[in-house]
Amino acid sequence: MTQIDPARISRLFRTLSTSAGSQSNNVGSSKSEIDLKGKDLRSPAALQVSIKARLTGLNQEELRTAGPVITIQEVLRWEFGDEVLNNADFSAVTEKVVSAMLADERLAPALQRLVFSLAG
Image 1 (cartoon, rainbow, N blue to C red):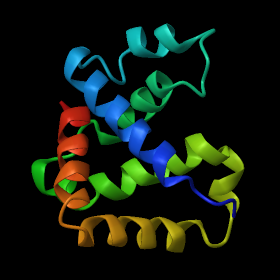
Image 2: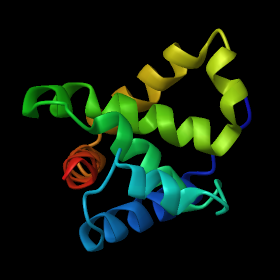
Image 3: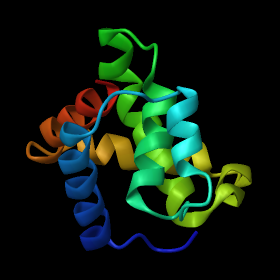
Image 4: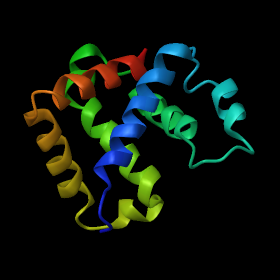
């Protein structure tokens, strides 16, 4: 797999956190899907919509446990393309990234805040 740039991921998380608080929660609705048509699917807004769509409908416990995994899966898919999902190591890499982030006393609460803010 290609190396992940930590600075880029940090900027991306900041962008997602900032825009999560300023946008409505129309995720999964036809309006959100229509809004992305014709737009850059590599934009942070497109990533935000895909994460929100996957988080929709999860309860608080699922957001706490599965939310970080879903978020990182979507970030990796956004960064490296849909082909990354076919990589045999995708699940293991996702779990390692999430575990490392949740083990960090500064990153863990930031990731959880991001998940809950994107979930609405």
